[in-house]
Length: 405
Picture 1 (cartoon, one colour):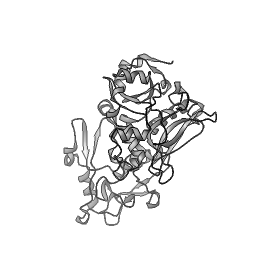
Picture 2 (cartoon, rainbow, N blue to C red):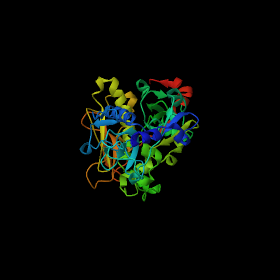
Picture 3 (tube, helix red, strand yellow):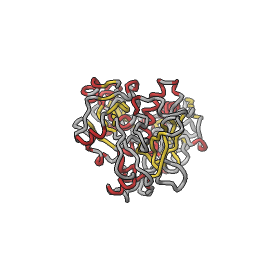
Picture 4 (tube, rainbow, N blue to C red):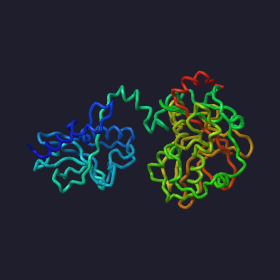
Protein backbone atom coordinates (compact mmCIF):
# COMPACT_ATOMS: atom_id res chain seq x y z
CA UNK A 1 0.00 0.00 0.00
CA UNK A 2 3.02 2.29 -0.04
CA UNK A 3 2.56 5.47 -2.04
CA UNK A 4 5.72 4.80 -4.02
CA UNK A 5 4.48 1.44 -5.29
CA UNK A 6 1.27 3.15 -6.43
CA UNK A 7 3.41 5.67 -8.29
CA UNK A 8 5.39 2.86 -9.89
CA UNK A 9 2.12 1.16 -10.83
CA UNK A 10 1.09 4.32 -12.65
CA UNK A 11 4.45 4.91 -14.36
CA UNK A 12 4.67 1.32 -15.63
CA UNK A 13 1.05 0.91 -16.77
CA UNK A 14 1.21 0.81 -20.61
CA UNK A 15 -2.40 1.97 -20.80
CA UNK A 16 -1.37 5.34 -19.38
CA UNK A 17 1.29 5.94 -22.02
CA UNK A 18 -0.34 4.60 -25.16
CA UNK A 19 0.00 7.95 -26.93
CA UNK A 20 3.78 7.54 -27.18
CA UNK A 21 3.53 4.30 -29.12
CA UNK A 22 3.93 4.01 -32.86
CA UNK A 23 2.80 1.16 -35.09
CA UNK A 24 5.99 -0.81 -34.42
CA UNK A 25 6.18 -0.34 -30.64
CA UNK A 26 5.08 -3.12 -28.29
CA UNK A 27 4.43 -0.82 -25.35
CA UNK A 28 5.34 2.52 -23.80
CA UNK A 29 5.76 3.45 -20.12
CA UNK A 30 6.40 6.71 -18.31
CA UNK A 31 10.11 6.21 -17.72
CA UNK A 32 12.83 3.61 -17.38
CA UNK A 33 13.06 1.62 -14.18
CA UNK A 34 16.09 2.09 -11.99
CA UNK A 35 17.46 -1.27 -13.06
CA UNK A 36 17.02 -0.56 -16.77
CA UNK A 37 18.62 2.85 -16.34
CA UNK A 38 21.62 1.35 -14.57
CA UNK A 39 22.07 -1.46 -17.11
CA UNK A 40 22.21 1.16 -19.86
CA UNK A 41 24.53 3.47 -17.91
CA UNK A 42 26.93 0.71 -16.90
CA UNK A 43 27.15 -0.57 -20.46
CA UNK A 44 28.04 2.95 -21.63
CA UNK A 45 30.60 3.31 -18.87
CA UNK A 46 32.31 0.12 -19.99
CA UNK A 47 32.25 1.23 -23.61
CA UNK A 48 33.82 4.55 -22.69
CA UNK A 49 36.47 2.70 -20.68
CA UNK A 50 35.70 4.80 -17.62
CA UNK A 51 35.07 1.90 -15.25
CA UNK A 52 32.27 3.78 -13.54
CA UNK A 53 29.46 1.53 -12.37
CA UNK A 54 26.37 1.80 -10.23
CA UNK A 55 25.31 -1.11 -8.05
CA UNK A 56 21.76 -1.62 -6.77
CA UNK A 57 20.24 -3.89 -4.15
CA UNK A 58 16.58 -4.88 -3.87
CA UNK A 59 14.59 -5.16 -0.63
CA UNK A 60 10.97 -5.87 0.14
CA UNK A 61 10.21 -2.17 0.03
CA UNK A 62 12.30 -0.95 -2.89
CA UNK A 63 15.85 -0.36 -4.11
CA UNK A 64 19.01 0.87 -2.49
CA UNK A 65 22.05 1.81 -4.50
CA UNK A 66 25.74 2.64 -4.31
CA UNK A 67 28.24 3.93 -6.81
CA UNK A 68 28.86 7.41 -8.03
CA UNK A 69 28.05 10.68 -6.36
CA UNK A 70 28.60 14.37 -6.94
CA UNK A 71 32.38 14.44 -7.26
CA UNK A 72 32.42 11.89 -10.07
CA UNK A 73 29.83 13.73 -12.16
CA UNK A 74 28.10 10.48 -12.93
CA UNK A 75 25.63 11.62 -15.53
CA UNK A 76 27.73 14.02 -17.57
CA UNK A 77 26.44 14.78 -21.05
CA UNK A 78 29.45 13.00 -22.56
CA UNK A 79 27.68 9.73 -21.85
CA UNK A 80 25.57 9.24 -24.97
CA UNK A 81 24.21 12.71 -25.63
CA UNK A 82 22.63 13.32 -22.27
CA UNK A 83 20.22 10.40 -22.09
CA UNK A 84 21.20 10.07 -18.43
CA UNK A 85 20.56 13.72 -17.66
CA UNK A 86 17.64 16.12 -17.77
CA UNK A 87 15.98 16.74 -21.10
CA UNK A 88 14.29 20.09 -20.43
CA UNK A 89 14.45 22.96 -17.95
CA UNK A 90 13.34 20.77 -15.06
CA UNK A 91 16.09 19.52 -12.79
CA UNK A 92 14.41 16.16 -12.10
CA UNK A 93 12.77 13.30 -13.94
CA UNK A 94 11.19 10.18 -12.49
CA UNK A 95 12.44 6.63 -12.69
CA UNK A 96 9.81 3.92 -12.40
CA UNK A 97 11.18 2.33 -9.22
CA UNK A 98 10.49 2.72 -5.50
CA UNK A 99 13.13 3.79 -3.02
CA UNK A 100 13.57 1.71 0.11
CA UNK A 101 12.82 4.55 2.51
CA UNK A 102 11.27 4.84 5.93
CA UNK A 103 7.95 6.34 4.88
CA UNK A 104 7.20 4.34 1.73
CA UNK A 105 6.71 7.41 -0.45
CA UNK A 106 10.13 7.77 -2.11
CA UNK A 107 10.44 7.26 -5.85
CA UNK A 108 13.75 7.44 -7.66
CA UNK A 109 14.51 10.39 -9.90
CA UNK A 110 17.53 11.73 -11.75
CA UNK A 111 18.72 15.02 -10.34
CA UNK A 112 20.53 17.32 -12.73
CA UNK A 113 22.48 19.67 -10.53
CA UNK A 114 24.06 16.87 -8.53
CA UNK A 115 24.69 14.63 -11.49
CA UNK A 116 23.41 11.67 -9.51
CA UNK A 117 20.36 9.74 -8.34
CA UNK A 118 18.23 11.51 -5.79
CA UNK A 119 16.22 8.97 -3.76
CA UNK A 120 14.79 11.68 -1.51
CA UNK A 121 11.96 12.65 -3.81
CA UNK A 122 8.41 11.77 -2.95
CA UNK A 123 5.12 11.66 -4.83
CA UNK A 124 3.49 14.64 -3.13
CA UNK A 125 2.49 17.77 -5.04
CA UNK A 126 5.53 19.62 -3.70
CA UNK A 127 7.48 17.97 -6.49
CA UNK A 128 4.95 18.40 -9.25
CA UNK A 129 7.59 19.87 -11.55
CA UNK A 130 9.50 16.59 -11.67
CA UNK A 131 9.05 15.31 -15.21
CA UNK A 132 8.80 11.99 -17.02
CA UNK A 133 10.86 10.64 -19.90
CA UNK A 134 8.73 7.98 -21.58
CA UNK A 135 10.39 4.93 -23.13
CA UNK A 136 9.03 2.65 -25.82
CA UNK A 137 9.84 -0.99 -26.53
CA UNK A 138 10.35 -2.35 -30.06
CA UNK A 139 11.37 -5.85 -31.10
CA UNK A 140 15.06 -5.85 -32.01
CA UNK A 141 14.55 -7.42 -35.49
CA UNK A 142 12.03 -4.70 -36.30
CA UNK A 143 14.38 -2.01 -35.01
CA UNK A 144 17.29 -3.38 -37.02
CA UNK A 145 15.22 -3.57 -40.18
CA UNK A 146 13.46 -0.19 -40.01
CA UNK A 147 15.28 2.12 -37.62
CA UNK A 148 18.93 1.23 -37.05
CA UNK A 149 20.08 2.90 -40.25
CA UNK A 150 18.49 6.16 -39.08
CA UNK A 151 20.57 6.42 -35.91
CA UNK A 152 22.34 9.77 -35.84
CA UNK A 153 25.67 8.16 -35.00
CA UNK A 154 25.30 5.65 -37.82
CA UNK A 155 24.31 8.34 -40.29
CA UNK A 156 27.56 10.13 -39.83
CA UNK A 157 30.31 8.11 -38.15
CA UNK A 158 28.94 5.12 -36.23
CA UNK A 159 30.66 1.73 -36.05
CA UNK A 160 33.06 0.87 -38.85
CA UNK A 161 32.70 -2.05 -41.24
CA UNK A 162 34.79 -3.26 -44.21
CA UNK A 163 37.96 -1.59 -42.91
CA UNK A 164 40.19 -4.06 -44.76
CA UNK A 165 39.12 -2.34 -48.00
CA UNK A 166 39.77 1.25 -46.94
CA UNK A 167 41.91 2.94 -49.55
CA UNK A 168 40.78 0.78 -52.44
CA UNK A 169 39.83 2.60 -55.63
CA UNK A 170 36.12 2.92 -56.42
CA UNK A 171 36.21 2.70 -60.19
CA UNK A 172 32.48 3.12 -60.59
CA UNK A 173 32.04 6.52 -58.96
CA UNK A 174 32.20 9.70 -61.07
CA UNK A 175 31.29 13.21 -59.97
CA UNK A 176 28.56 14.89 -62.01
CA UNK A 177 30.80 17.87 -62.79
CA UNK A 178 33.50 16.98 -65.31
CA UNK A 179 36.04 19.52 -64.06
CA UNK A 180 35.50 18.44 -60.45
CA UNK A 181 35.99 14.80 -61.40
CA UNK A 182 39.21 15.66 -63.21
CA UNK A 183 40.47 17.55 -60.15
CA UNK A 184 39.58 14.66 -57.83
CA UNK A 185 41.28 12.18 -60.14
CA UNK A 186 39.55 9.13 -58.69
CA UNK A 187 37.73 8.12 -55.50
CA UNK A 188 38.77 5.75 -52.76
CA UNK A 189 36.87 4.05 -49.96
CA UNK A 190 37.58 6.11 -46.86
CA UNK A 191 35.10 4.94 -44.22
CA UNK A 192 31.95 2.84 -44.00
CA UNK A 193 29.29 1.89 -41.47
CA UNK A 194 26.09 -0.09 -41.86
CA UNK A 195 24.15 2.93 -43.07
CA UNK A 196 26.57 5.19 -44.95
CA UNK A 197 29.79 5.02 -46.97
CA UNK A 198 32.38 7.78 -47.46
CA UNK A 199 34.67 8.15 -50.45
CA UNK A 200 37.67 10.50 -50.57
CA UNK A 201 39.28 12.10 -53.61
CA UNK A 202 42.46 10.43 -54.78
CA UNK A 203 44.05 13.81 -55.44
CA UNK A 204 44.85 16.67 -53.13
CA UNK A 205 43.25 19.72 -54.75
CA UNK A 206 45.07 23.04 -54.38
CA UNK A 207 42.82 26.14 -54.34
CA UNK A 208 43.96 29.51 -55.63
CA UNK A 209 43.65 31.28 -52.26
CA UNK A 210 44.29 30.82 -48.58
CA UNK A 211 41.54 29.18 -46.57
CA UNK A 212 40.58 32.54 -45.05
CA UNK A 213 40.26 34.12 -48.47
CA UNK A 214 38.16 31.19 -49.63
CA UNK A 215 35.64 31.31 -46.80
CA UNK A 216 35.54 35.12 -46.76
CA UNK A 217 34.88 35.36 -50.49
CA UNK A 218 32.19 32.69 -50.15
CA UNK A 219 30.34 34.79 -47.55
CA UNK A 220 31.42 33.06 -44.34
CA UNK A 221 33.38 35.95 -42.86
CA UNK A 222 30.58 36.83 -40.44
CA UNK A 223 29.50 33.27 -39.63
CA UNK A 224 29.56 31.76 -36.14
CA UNK A 225 29.50 28.29 -34.65
CA UNK A 226 25.71 28.30 -34.96
CA UNK A 227 26.06 28.54 -38.74
CA UNK A 228 27.96 25.27 -39.10
CA UNK A 229 25.76 22.80 -40.98
CA UNK A 230 24.15 19.84 -39.24
CA UNK A 231 26.53 17.61 -41.17
CA UNK A 232 29.51 19.64 -40.02
CA UNK A 233 28.36 19.45 -36.42
CA UNK A 234 27.62 15.74 -36.45
CA UNK A 235 30.91 14.90 -38.14
CA UNK A 236 32.59 16.76 -35.25
CA UNK A 237 30.60 15.02 -32.47
CA UNK A 238 33.04 15.69 -29.62
CA UNK A 239 33.02 19.37 -30.48
CA UNK A 240 29.24 19.39 -30.67
CA UNK A 241 29.06 17.78 -27.26
CA UNK A 242 31.41 20.46 -25.91
CA UNK A 243 28.99 23.21 -27.02
CA UNK A 244 31.24 24.83 -29.64
CA UNK A 245 28.49 25.34 -32.21
CA UNK A 246 26.85 28.48 -30.81
CA UNK A 247 26.59 32.09 -31.91
CA UNK A 248 29.11 33.00 -29.22
CA UNK A 249 31.84 31.15 -31.11
CA UNK A 250 33.18 33.71 -33.59
CA UNK A 251 36.65 32.20 -34.02
CA UNK A 252 38.13 32.28 -37.48
CA UNK A 253 38.57 28.51 -37.44
CA UNK A 254 34.85 27.90 -36.90
CA UNK A 255 34.12 30.06 -39.94
CA UNK A 256 36.53 27.89 -41.90
CA UNK A 257 34.77 24.75 -40.66
CA UNK A 258 31.38 26.22 -41.61
CA UNK A 259 32.70 26.70 -45.13
CA UNK A 260 34.39 23.33 -45.55
CA UNK A 261 31.40 21.40 -44.18
CA UNK A 262 28.64 23.25 -46.03
CA UNK A 263 27.35 20.76 -48.62
CA UNK A 264 26.12 23.65 -50.79
CA UNK A 265 29.75 24.56 -51.53
CA UNK A 266 30.73 21.13 -52.78
CA UNK A 267 27.81 19.82 -54.85
CA UNK A 268 30.00 19.52 -57.95
CA UNK A 269 31.62 16.42 -56.44
CA UNK A 270 28.27 14.64 -56.05
CA UNK A 271 26.43 12.43 -58.46
CA UNK A 272 22.88 11.04 -58.48
CA UNK A 273 23.75 8.44 -55.83
CA UNK A 274 25.57 10.58 -53.27
CA UNK A 275 23.76 12.30 -50.43
CA UNK A 276 26.24 15.10 -49.85
CA UNK A 277 29.82 16.17 -50.42
CA UNK A 278 32.06 18.36 -48.24
CA UNK A 279 35.52 19.83 -48.75
CA UNK A 280 37.55 17.47 -46.54
CA UNK A 281 36.97 14.89 -43.80
CA UNK A 282 36.78 16.08 -40.22
CA UNK A 283 39.49 15.08 -37.76
CA UNK A 284 37.13 12.65 -36.00
CA UNK A 285 36.18 10.92 -39.25
CA UNK A 286 39.85 10.78 -40.24
CA UNK A 287 40.84 9.33 -36.86
CA UNK A 288 38.01 6.80 -36.92
CA UNK A 289 39.05 5.52 -40.34
CA UNK A 290 42.76 5.54 -39.46
CA UNK A 291 42.24 3.80 -36.12
CA UNK A 292 40.26 1.01 -37.77
CA UNK A 293 43.41 0.20 -39.72
CA UNK A 294 45.35 0.45 -36.47
CA UNK A 295 43.30 -2.45 -35.12
CA UNK A 296 44.47 -4.75 -37.89
CA UNK A 297 48.09 -3.53 -38.18
CA UNK A 298 50.72 -3.50 -35.46
CA UNK A 299 48.20 -4.52 -32.76
CA UNK A 300 46.58 -1.10 -32.90
CA UNK A 301 49.47 0.69 -31.20
CA UNK A 302 49.64 3.50 -33.75
CA UNK A 303 46.28 5.13 -33.25
CA UNK A 304 45.10 8.72 -32.88
CA UNK A 305 43.45 9.88 -29.67
CA UNK A 306 41.46 13.11 -29.40
CA UNK A 307 40.24 15.53 -26.77
CA UNK A 308 38.71 19.01 -26.74
CA UNK A 309 40.87 21.99 -25.78
CA UNK A 310 40.10 25.73 -26.04
CA UNK A 311 37.18 25.30 -28.43
CA UNK A 312 38.94 22.89 -30.77
CA UNK A 313 40.68 19.54 -30.97
CA UNK A 314 43.86 18.35 -29.34
CA UNK A 315 45.35 15.04 -30.45
CA UNK A 316 48.10 12.56 -29.98
CA UNK A 317 49.38 9.48 -31.81
CA UNK A 318 52.08 6.89 -31.54
CA UNK A 319 53.95 7.34 -34.79
CA UNK A 320 52.75 8.66 -38.14
CA UNK A 321 49.68 8.51 -40.37
CA UNK A 322 51.88 7.23 -43.19
CA UNK A 323 52.18 3.81 -41.54
CA UNK A 324 48.78 2.59 -42.77
CA UNK A 325 49.29 3.90 -46.27
CA UNK A 326 46.12 2.52 -47.87
CA UNK A 327 46.96 4.22 -51.16
CA UNK A 328 47.70 7.53 -49.44
CA UNK A 329 44.24 8.21 -48.02
CA UNK A 330 45.93 9.21 -44.74
CA UNK A 331 49.03 10.72 -46.32
CA UNK A 332 50.26 13.78 -48.19
CA UNK A 333 51.49 12.84 -51.61
CA UNK A 334 51.47 16.10 -53.54
CA UNK A 335 55.04 17.10 -54.49
CA UNK A 336 56.58 20.47 -53.77
CA UNK A 337 55.47 22.98 -51.16
CA UNK A 338 51.85 21.82 -50.94
CA UNK A 339 52.41 18.59 -49.07
CA UNK A 340 49.53 19.22 -46.66
CA UNK A 341 45.76 19.29 -46.70
CA UNK A 342 43.04 20.72 -44.48
CA UNK A 343 40.74 18.76 -42.21
CA UNK A 344 37.28 20.15 -41.48
CA UNK A 345 37.90 20.67 -37.75
CA UNK A 346 39.17 23.55 -35.60
CA UNK A 347 42.35 23.05 -33.62
CA UNK A 348 42.45 23.88 -29.93
CA UNK A 349 45.95 25.15 -29.35
CA UNK A 350 46.61 28.13 -27.10
CA UNK A 351 43.92 30.39 -25.69
CA UNK A 352 43.37 33.21 -28.16
CA UNK A 353 44.62 31.31 -31.22
CA UNK A 354 41.18 30.78 -32.66
CA UNK A 355 42.30 30.70 -36.28
CA UNK A 356 44.06 27.33 -36.25
CA UNK A 357 42.52 24.54 -38.36
CA UNK A 358 43.55 20.89 -38.32
CA UNK A 359 45.54 19.53 -41.25
CA UNK A 360 47.51 16.55 -42.49
CA UNK A 361 51.12 17.61 -42.86
CA UNK A 362 54.06 15.78 -44.37
CA UNK A 363 57.04 16.62 -42.20
CA UNK A 364 60.61 17.15 -43.32
CA UNK A 365 62.01 14.89 -40.61
CA UNK A 366 61.60 11.69 -42.58
CA UNK A 367 58.80 10.41 -40.35
CA UNK A 368 56.06 10.85 -42.91
CA UNK A 369 52.66 12.53 -42.51
CA UNK A 370 50.94 13.41 -39.27
CA UNK A 371 48.04 15.42 -37.86
CA UNK A 372 48.98 19.06 -37.38
CA UNK A 373 47.34 22.50 -37.57
CA UNK A 374 47.96 25.90 -39.09
CA UNK A 375 46.60 29.44 -39.44
CA UNK A 376 43.80 30.01 -41.94
CA UNK A 377 45.31 33.14 -43.52
CA UNK A 378 49.00 32.27 -43.85
CA UNK A 379 49.34 29.89 -46.79
CA UNK A 380 47.45 27.91 -49.38
CA UNK A 381 46.72 24.32 -48.51
CA UNK A 382 44.95 21.52 -50.35
CA UNK A 383 41.53 20.03 -49.77
CA UNK A 384 40.40 16.44 -50.26
CA UNK A 385 36.63 16.30 -50.84
CA UNK A 386 34.60 13.42 -49.47
CA UNK A 387 31.20 12.19 -50.66
CA UNK A 388 28.62 10.23 -48.68
CA UNK A 389 26.54 7.42 -50.19
CA UNK A 390 24.05 5.09 -48.54
CA UNK A 391 25.84 1.82 -47.85
CA UNK A 392 22.99 -0.17 -49.43
CA UNK A 393 23.45 1.82 -52.66
CA UNK A 394 27.23 1.49 -52.48
CA UNK A 395 27.01 -2.25 -52.02
CA UNK A 396 24.61 -2.61 -54.93
CA UNK A 397 26.34 -0.33 -57.45
CA UNK A 398 29.93 0.36 -56.43
CA UNK A 399 31.42 -2.29 -54.20
CA UNK A 400 31.99 -4.62 -57.11
CA UNK A 401 34.14 -1.91 -58.75
CA UNK A 402 36.62 -1.74 -55.84
CA UNK A 403 40.22 -2.38 -56.85
CA UNK A 404 43.34 -2.54 -54.69
CA UNK A 405 45.33 -0.30 -57.01
